[in-house]
Length: 421
Image (cartoon, rainbow, N blue to C red; front, top):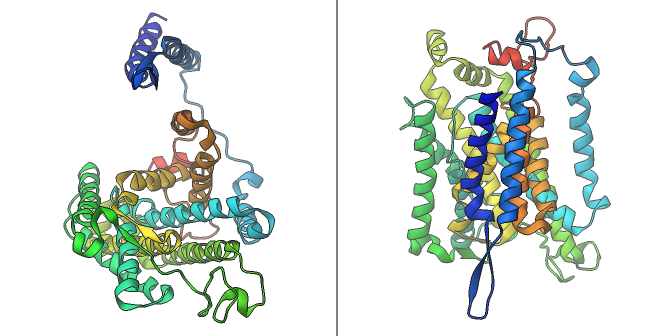
């Protein structure tokens, strides 16, 4: 009991040091500029909640039996629910523009963009086990590649899209070569530095990228040459189908474009996972030394993982550029990489469905509570902490092996932790 009180008291002191400067003072308009107003009650409430929560958690853990309890397997209907959830989500995503308004279609487009980024990073982190903190670099390369090619050579979106993906894949291979012998924290540091290098280059190469001013007036995608503009003249979508011109038409079209690109990413990922290349990625993730002993070319396996993941990151970047119509280096900060990595980890490493659920929770949830202003990020961070305590291995921790002798059974999180996944 005494140790629990000491631990809770230390946790309360840490909470005081963290939240004291952030919550304990508020800037309000004064007679001459802004002035600080102390909020000791808010800090006291937070510290008390942390103390009581930590103490209750320690006492609850102390009351549990010392013998490790073996978790009962999930019910069959719950273990097989993924095969029903995925088609339901697909049908809902196809019918969303007909059932929801413009705001929700815009929000769904943003969520699908992060789903595509999550599926691309899932190849590198979830399948190959390579911790990449600079994935936003490929996102930026794809966006700037599309913007510069479309602006200087007059090519359309559908022509520039594969070019942006291939250029991003080339940079993925460029990143892969220096980190072939790195693992764990060292790999994370180098990939983080790579992402920052790309951002700094985009910020300072003013003659090519526009520097901090970015690139504007990026061409929009067309549907078989039909433009989505507020006009019903010849060559426009509204004029060809004899519809009233509306900005909603372009928004719905962009939603279906990112949905198609995300589904393409998912299909390719699932197909690659069943090929020898995908099995080599999973072998590399489990044990690199054993992977080498089996005769697998670790160099090529790592390079292909970086290249394929970067390829789909470039796709997402090209779509982001054409959707926004304007890009700048401020759109590709480390926080974007952290957000995509959090989606992959929260959803469950190697799980395609988990990435979708995590993106809906993190991106959609954070947008829905935007009205809470300064408390939005606090609630968001608290929800992540609680989620990782309840489900430390992600929303979908179990998975079905790519290749199985006989009937394929789902591998639980406990077996994955023991190296049997």
